[in-house]
Amino acid sequence: MDKKGAKGYWISTSRVIDQELFADYVKKVTPWLKEVGGEVFAKDTEPQGKERTEGANLAVICEFASMRAAVEAYESSAYQELSKIRNAATENATFTIMEGMDEAAKFRRAMGK
Image 1 (cartoon, rainbow, N blue to C red):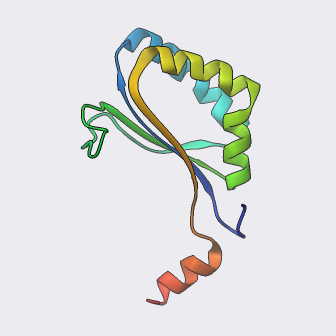
Image 2: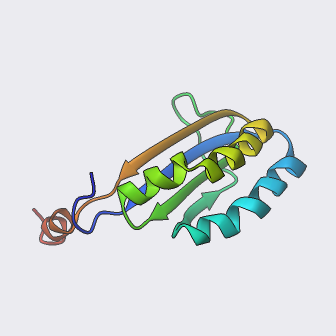
Image 3: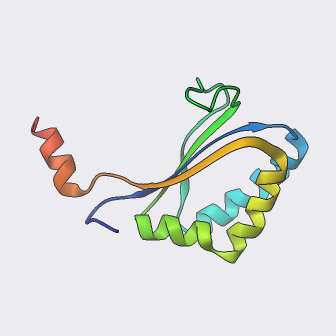
């Protein structure tokens, strides 16, 4: 975990079924995310769901400074409470935490290797 220069990411898809409750989640999670050093990297309310994500009306990628930061943020008691709101407002949700490419891999890719 935590390859040099590799960022951590949350990747989530879901179908929002309670817009009001989900808006409450967004209102609460946005400042918290900033506090823990995360940010929304990409968001789509019309994703093209494939392979068990058909019907999703939300896809979000959040970026963190490292894989460790992404995991710690997710496992924190604060986020576990926030996730209860997200889970109640959505269905068919997926949630994955992954590590991005490290600096060496980015360099090799840039060099065409």
